Image (cartoon, rainbow, N blue to C red; front, side, top):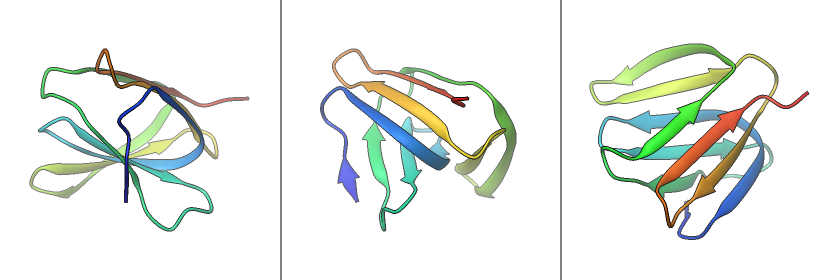
Length: 87
């Protein structure tokens, strides 16, 4: 698991595993482990182009993209995450 501590752009994100505490784990194609961003509970994150969201357990949920992948930009300094499906 790689922790995101700097501004980062992730391509080819297959799904996002989130929690109510503000943690987002990004599954990137070809990577064996997640990229983890630990934001605050009130962090500003927005995921567009979502096909479905499913509960994994009590506090975890899985976000699937409408297309094959998400592109995600994480601004670690401002606690901002934006994800969308690229064409």
